Image (cartoon, rainbow over all chains, first blue to last red; front, side):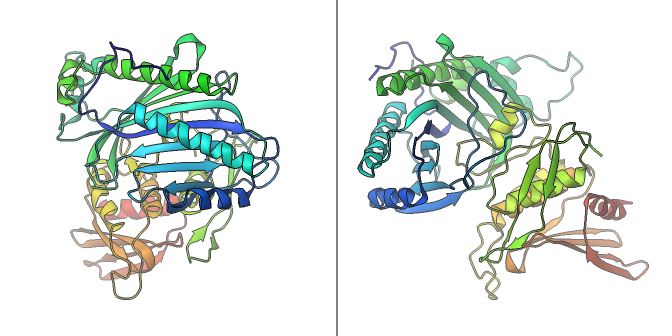
Length: 269
Length: 198
């Protein structure tokens, strides 16, 4: 496992609401619906909750056109199944070509367990899933792509009250965009895209004002989502990619936000 | 009408599911034809109600679609960027309806679903009425949502049912007229909201 870079910014109270680690894979003799049932039996003691969701569409790889519509050919797609732990904070999402592990806040009071713990849990779960497939005589999944996403909820009243305050939190908004005319910023929605170092994919950053269902709180949702192709399915490469993507996400997050915001989130280093 | 080249959407009629909710078949195919606002609206509304995958919205930028459609995030939030002020203001009250207990009305009604709230938001956003007053927001039987406006002598109630129907009752207390009907398309909705403030 890669150690945390000593100069990587660290926050005691980051506004993280959810962290997602996932892989996109293919299996020669595809996953069948009964495999999902059998897999659920295997993890049911730790993940008793179950929900069906619409499947996520195919994950675009770097260089592919992400715009436009896609169609699904061949057999009916499997649903995306959610397996939730008792608290709902840990969740595994499984569909025919995706395996995703989420950590998320449910009550809002949960303490962020940090990236390393979530990554280790993802790796353990992925290994367990691959072992399960082996037990079922299913061929080993071939990794195509991976994703690491940080979803931040910056609550209104935490360090902002009006959209015009966002210039104090985000460095790229920290200018008078009214051109001195004094117009008040009413709303912000934007997206930024960065290349990951070493041609390892892209980091998409999006900012969207929203209302959270859980507590009807107004928030600014600030997502940083890295995706990249995997050239080999080796676990060491997977970990290296996740660690590299995490480092980029943290540095970009820090770069896009101001010292005032860092103080609000109790920056340590 | 919104022109979107090389794209067309068809949406079938809702089909009852075992749970009594409407599922929808939403299909997308590439064609060199324009599509209408109503087609987009129907597809959006139906897609949020059913168990079908809705794989994007015409005209959305990749990062928007990433954030809204393809996201692996599981957090329930509703973007408010392009909502008119009155709709943004009543969004918390709409969301609070989802927290109602089952049988809240003692007639076995479920709470409105988040999917229905999203559908209501989609319709009202596309109506593009910026200057409406905030409506009263009340739960309706069988998991529906009703919005009520009282503006001078005019009253308007719009009910979004859990099966995908939109019904209204409008009253003009000055002329002592009442009318109720089904809202079939976006023009109907715009016309009604225009009548309220007209």
